[in-house]
Image 1 (cartoon, one colour):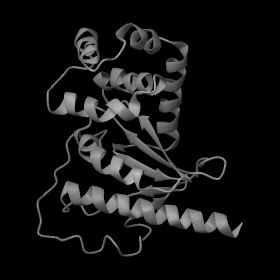
Image 2 (cartoon, rainbow, N blue to C red):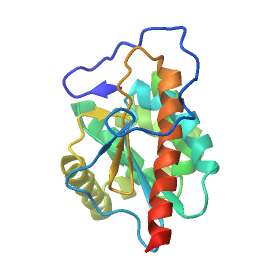
Image 3 (spheres, rainbow, N blue to C red):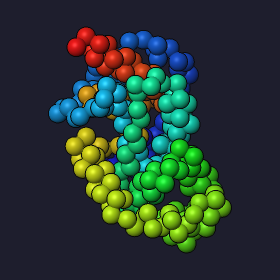
Image 4 (cartoon, rainbow, N blue to C red):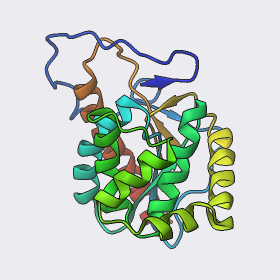
Length: 217
């Protein structure tokens, strides 16, 4: 987990199995209640928000699991990704997310962006190197840069900052379910891969809780 005040978190290897992942989620251990609660999904949808950054190695590790998890969700679940800016070099990465999203390329290229940064060490905060990488992906670089500099992307960047403040984001990746629940694993001895698996299982349980609550109304 990438923290604002501690940029690297240590994940000690343990012999713990996956026992407990299927157990009922517990408030104070597996999740917290968000206060004040934020608006959830609209039109009956259950919104899961991931606060992240392309620059965060822990977000990169979560990405393939999150994509698989998203594909398994029912149609009433929507995943919204909100980039945060804990460091100066994360600002262009946040703008890159919204630019790809505006061009309809987010689903196709987000995983590739993570790999380019964390496996191939491409400097996405360097415009020339970013343009070179985009061209290799078959992206219209001129259209990308025109979108990048648009008022629409400026507005989304401001909204992302406002959301991070409202949700009181201190670390990433961070998952929130329907504006009510913060998925939180407090066992820092658990290996990172297992932590991600457990947190996504908790998110699923919370989605079921929200769904059950909606059905009673």
